[in-house]
Amino acid sequence: MPHSIKLTRALVDRLPPRVESEGPLPDEPTPDAYYTDMATQLLAQADPSGLWVFASGSLIWNPRMPVAERRAALIHGWHRSFCLGPMLRFRGSPEAPGQMLSLDRGGSCHGVALRMEPGNEHADLVSLLQKEPPRPPSWVRCKTDQGVVRAIAFTMDRSWVAYCPEGCIDEVADKLATSVGTIGTMAEYLLNTVEHLAEVGIHDSHLWRLQAMVAERLERLPERPADQPSIENAASI
Image 1 (cartoon, rainbow, N blue to C red):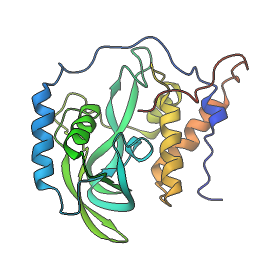
Image 2: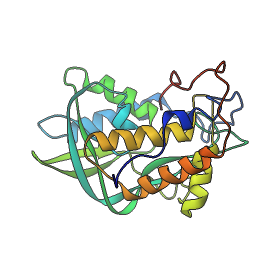
Image 3: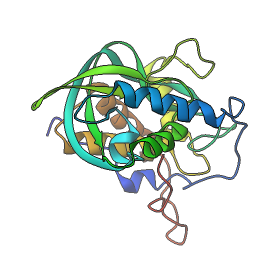
Image 4: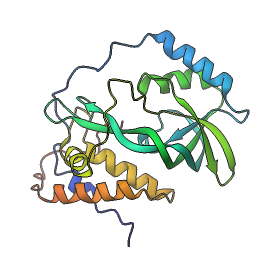
C-alpha cells in the first residue's frame, strides 16, 4: 500500500514517555486583554455560518474547542511545516529540543475546516487562543466539497523569535525521533497527525516521508521493558 504508515505506537513506545526537564517559556506572559480583544475582533469578521478554524496539525486530533462540523479543506498561500521551535518544553527539552508544525508562507495545504459549536463562541475562542502561539491568526479561504468557507488559521509570523525554518529532512527526522518533553514525544505528535490526516483521506507526501524516516530511526532503539509505562496516557498538544 503506497500510503501506508510505517511509524507505529510500538515504535513510539521505545522512547521514554516523558521527561522532567523543561526550558523557559519563549515570551513574557501575554495579557488577558489580548485574548479577549482578539476573540471579539475575529468573531465580528466571521462568516454568518459561524466561526471556522483551519486545522493543519494537532488541531485535527485535539481541536481544543467544541466542534459542530468538520470538512476536509484546501487552502492556498500557506504550507504545513515544522517551523515552530525550538521547543524546550511540552514535547521537547533543553537537552533534545522539539520542532512543531505551523503554517509557513507559500504553497498550499490540505487540512480540516472545523466549525466551532455555537452558543459560547467568545469564551471558547478565548480559550483556544490561549493555547496557541500569541500571534494573531490569519484569515484563509478553505475550499471544501460543500463550498468555500472563510476560516482563521494559526500561521507563522516569520519575524517572531520562535520562527525556525524547517531545514533539511534528515535533521527534522532526527529531532522528531529524539525529542521528549514533559507531556510526550514529537514522534507521537507526528504519528497522531498522519493517522488523522489519513482518516479524512489526506496524504501529505512530506509527512509520509518523515514518518517513515522516524520509524527507521526508532527501529534502532531497544524495546522498552514491559514494566515501564506506555505513552498512551500522555497529554495531547
